[in-house]
Image (cartoon, rainbow, N blue to C red; front, side, top):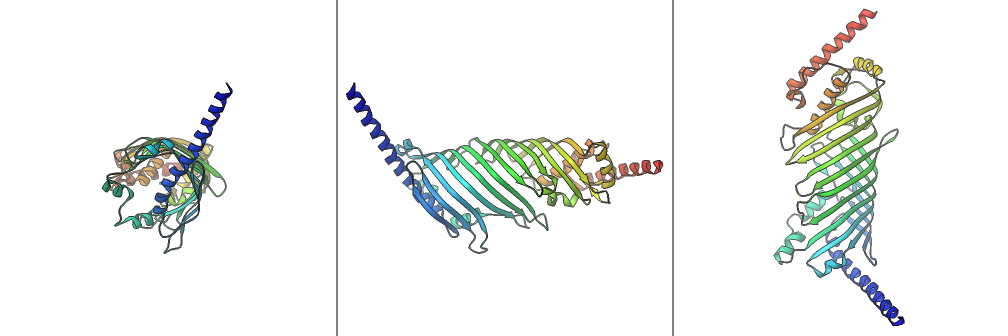
Length: 376
């Protein structure tokens, strides 16, 4: 019996030693690819081999021309699978990004600018890792079980909407994606995201669950938004709101499906403690004076359903406009305004549909004014 214990002990020592050695060499396979991805503007403070993973710390990207910092990552950890060393593939059990901060913006022309733009420019005219592998007849398939982002932050500045630009700030981002491959293949990768949305007076919450096909960009997700300040999105609706929205928060639930470049997104909107100044102006084509009166009757809370759908490749389809038009129509219905122009024209925000919508609301406003005059 004693000999058996000694034999088992020797096997355990060999297995543990072999695990550490294989993990060390597996990590070394990843290092060249990671270093190759670095280009002008990228800095890496430290890279270390741990017993089971590769650690890269202090990753940063600063645009060489504008000196704008777009990316900073506290630490990245890559955990390889030992069995993949025996095959012509690399299997990564987990890829973790700790405390990353991202900044990107949309220009006035509508171009998204971020660290990936410089990376794409650097790749132009050069062989990719995948192309070089194919030429040698030894393209390596990389499979990642799980990608995690922990305690991340995103600052997005939208300059296309005008001055001042819209600023969306996400904090405490925790994100997970499972089952991804490179070269990219068509597969449903489960995703989950939780984050806080920074406001002037309070923080809201956003949660996304579902799946995404990274190759085709098709997806099926559920979106849940809670207690986000309405004024956070003021730059997006200010062209359709000339009155001042003083305060209010929004909750939203939606099922978002994108298939063959077509979006289908039914949902429910809840505006809570919504207060609008009465001194003239319009809110989504509804006169402020009329809206204030109706809000008081509703206890300053309105819940309504919406449905956005369309072909995202159609140049005449604008997702932002389609959503705002839906909000306007659904808001009017929830307030009890008998809108008669609801149809394809209004839903697509054509000039004729919008004109009819405004005329209908103006007629409703005139009715409210007549009722007030009678009371006097």
